[in-house]
Structure formats: C-alpha cells, structure tokens
Length: 402
Image (cartoon, rainbow, N blue to C red; front, side):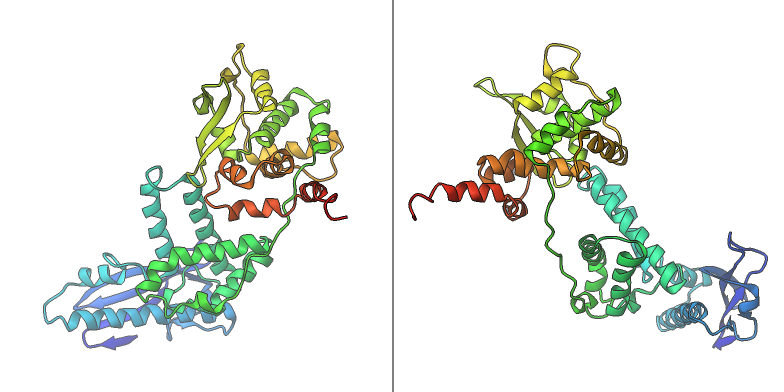
C-alpha cells in the first residue's frame, strides 16, 4: 500500500463479484483522514492473476501488462489530483477529491468516457442540427473503437494521452482485417475518428497530432451500374407480388436517383406540379440536407400509378422494407432477371447517374443537382465511367479529322 502524507491509494480485486466471463472487478481504494471510498476501474482479472501484496497482476503477458499500465495511470492521476487540491491552500473533503477523480466537471481523459460524453451530446441535438445518419455513424464508430480496445489491448478504456500513430495504425488494421471493412470505408472511419477527437487535440489531451503521421488515402473505385439492357431484363422479369414490389421500388430509384433513405421517406408532399403541367420531386437529402430537384420521368410516374389506389399517381402507397431485406431480395430478383452482377439498392443511384442521365447527354451540372451533390466533384467519378458517352461524343467529330 502506498502513502502520501495522510492519503492512501490501493487496488483490490473484489472476488465477491464477477462478470459473465468469470473475471473479478478491480477497485481503486482511496483512504483520506479516516474516510474510505472505492471506485470501480472498469478493469477485470482472474483471481489467480492478482497479487494482493503488490496490488498488480502477476502474469507477464500482453493482457496483464496492459491492465497493470492502466492501474499505474489511475494511481498517478490520484496523486496528481491530491497534489492539486493540497496546493489550493484550503480545506477539501474526500467527496470533492473523488468527484475530481471521477472527472465530474472536467472533460474525460479516457477515450471511451470521452466518446460516451460526445454521443450523449449528439443525442440531445438529434433532429435539431444532427441527422439520424450522423448520429448512427458516431455510434458505430464508437462501437468499433470499444471492440478494438478489447481485442487489441484487452481493456475497456484507454488514456487519451496514449493515443499515437501506432494506436491509429493498429485501429486501421483492425477495421480492415478483423472487421473485414473495405479500405475506403476504413479510411473514412479514421477520418471521422479524428473529427470526434478534434476537441481533445485542441485541448492537448492528445499530445501533438498523431493523425498527421498516418498516410492512408481513399482509393479510386469504379462505380458499377446497370446497363440499359439489364434495366430491360429487370423490368420484364416475371416475379412474385412481393418481389415485384421490391423491383418497383428499386426501379423508381433508378429513374429518380433517390437514395434508400430518401425513397423510404418519399411521399406525395415531395411531388410538385409545374406551370407546364410537368411534375418533379423536390426533397432535401437525408444524408446532407442538400435539396434535390428531379423531374419525374414517365417510367417513374407509371411505377407510382401502379401502386396508387386512385387515378392520381401521387396517391401511391407502398411498404419500403429495410435496406438489408431489400438487398437480399434484389439478389433473388437479379437471378430471375438473368443479370450477372448482384444488384443492391445503391446500384440504382449509380444507374440513374450513368445509364439514365449522363449516357443520354444530360449535363453533369444538372445530374449533380438532381443527385443532391454539393459539388460537381462528387458527380465527376460517374462521368469517368460512361465509355459509351465518350464514344458517342467523339463520333460527332470523326468526319472533321479524316
């Protein structure tokens, strides 16, 4: 047991409690002026690993070493907090000291605590200036980090001050290898992780900027899409009523460019009639808030009319299943239609950008507006893959340069 003036710190393995894995919680005990308080550290170990004399784990392996390092950090923080209180030259209570140790009133210095605080802050802003998609992205990112700590370091928490380029590289490899996440998505998770930690970087809770030392870049990926022939095969395939409904929802996206969540939210309130008796969709994208203006093609109107209970196509009604269920059924639909590539819902958005619009001479600026992109650059990669459009355009000048 260690002593500093009239305060004592120690760690205990509470063998009267255990988690689902049969491990016991480690408790940080503080004794000051005859009063005692205990704090659960969030760390666990097996009874045989604990040395009651040294207040540390005995086994010299990666897991035990990581836990011992965390205990050292907690103990060091205890001394630092006590010294800060003692130097204030005024009386203080053990409860005040414990509140400080628990981080009440301060930004968390442990990673998971920091992420949880941020998640709670976003939850309060949900529906105000934070979209459900952004909140879900934060939640998934925090979940990946938590599972990474358990897998790589065998701990439930980690000091922000210990995050360095080696930590970030291991996290990236965990996303790619253990989780099986694609390269570009993993890069986006790292970028989002930096955004989450930006306040901690500014407050110097994380030394320097370890993100500058990692060099992962987004790789160029060719976007797949359905050709006009594949669209025809899809439209003419004989399907059961349930698969027919899924096909119609998918084809509607092919002819409007709406993403899954926007199709799910789509209703008659998003349909407008112009002065020339043409109809168009006006709807902000759920993902970005960017407004889309999309003229309704006859093919899209026919689909809506098919699901309308009246002669007005705007009275359509349909049930949009979850994205996972739709993608599962689209695979079956693709097999029935004889399409070689496996359809998925976002393929419809790619198809609208390429086969339906760019290939038929619609300017990229117009396509960008309909897709709800904030910049032309987001639409540019679709233009790169429309080879038939390039051939068609060049054919116009063949007679000039003979």
